[in-house]
Length: 144
Image (cartoon, rainbow, N blue to C red; front, side, top):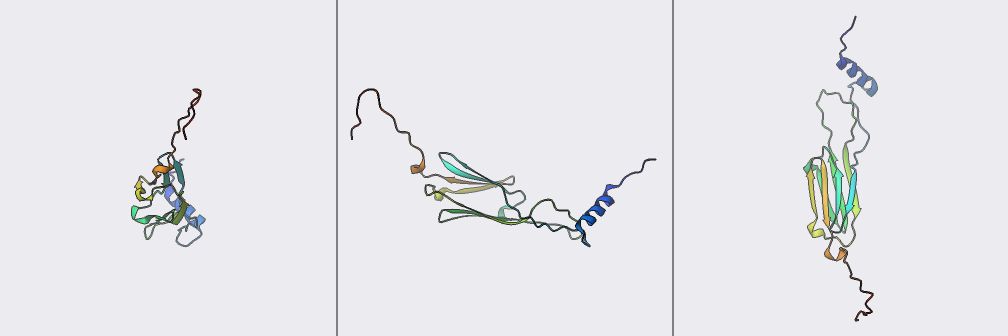
């Protein structure tokens, strides 16, 4: 009454039908653009970039004329006879951000871990907020 259903040939047929090519391989036309959070506090500006599958050697971070540039590539690799239905984006990406003039670019640092690139750009000391005491109520005047 019940038949054993073998999903592999069915999936194989579906991939071939959807792809419409003789080899059953999809080419992805979407470009890979990493999502980036930019955070700022009193001490630094931090860029947090999602770059899953991107190797350290395939990333380049530069700073020139206050422009932080992040370049990279997420490569697509497949076996010679492998059929692929692509759901993820691949390819080269390029993002650039103009930094404010109060950053200390001599201490810029980039770190890649678990598919996340974190770039820390410290703020120069003069850029940090300074608390000014307020005097009042005693009738004293500021000396100038």
